[in-house]
Amino acid sequence: MAELRATNEYTLDTVTMNVADADLDLSTARDMAKAKARDIDSNAMMLSYHSGKTGEFWPTYDCGGGGRPPWIVFAEARGYNLKIDINNGEYEFFYLRF
Image (cartoon, rainbow, N blue to C red):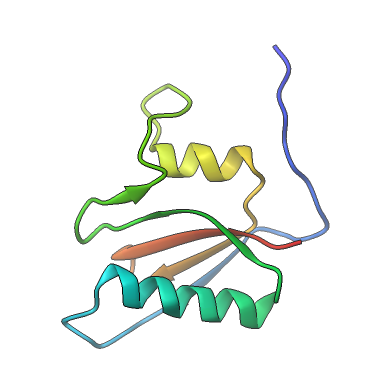
């Protein structure tokens, strides 16, 4: 079986953000993650996300197998190399830097 894997010169990095806002929602968290990712690389592209707060994730279809979370399988298959983690898993965004 052939395996496709995107590669580039960037290492896998995780940026942890702590936001003291009890009303933080997905839309605001996504905007914050996007701003942080674009500060790091102006071409960064979001591949997937997961909300530990609500259980919501994207893409919303099952991919891969073996019981692994689809948002991680999707991001790994596309070579993600930047994760923005807001409030220790409350919101996780997976990006590709070019």
